[in-house]
Image (cartoon, rainbow, N blue to C red; front, side):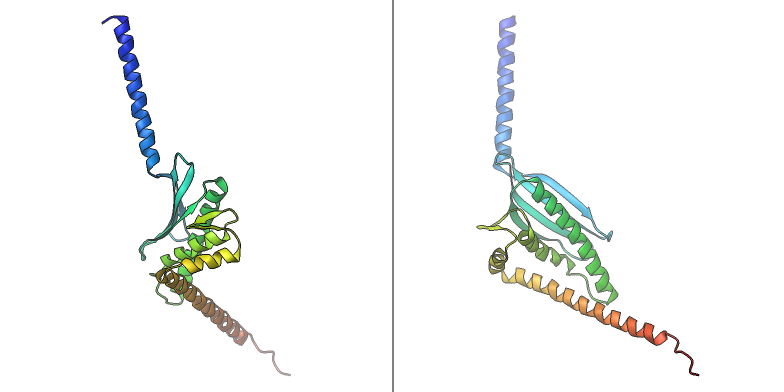
Length: 204
């Protein structure tokens, strides 16, 4: 085999490698790939939250965001929304999941103190995800609506909720209100007990 034949074979091999590479790239761009996964440990070792962002490599845009909370006692709830790919939104979602994890752990702790069942706590994620879309200072694309910190957009989201989604949100809100009342009653009782225990001044 002379030098020319070797050169031709080398060029053919290089071209084949380039073709395979291009096919692989275009195949990958046809479907979403996971761009970022953030696991946030909460105050409870039995509970964690994480967010998965899936990005289309051609458009350089996140196509799906999945917010999820897992607990020992509850099945996973997830809610998807579209969001523009930029550092501010990714950081916002990260912070949102951290806050959500702390809130879940605290809600669970209060619930257990008052003898309440906690197997529905993962439903908080539905409310948190809708709240994220409403509160985000950036832009979150939800269906046909562009969500910002404006109440009218929040109203539009509410109008799009299914009865099942609405029940989830109302259920956790009801639980939180009940916990708030119980905490208030507990504080009043403790205050009365403290006052009752104070020694009365001796009469002359």
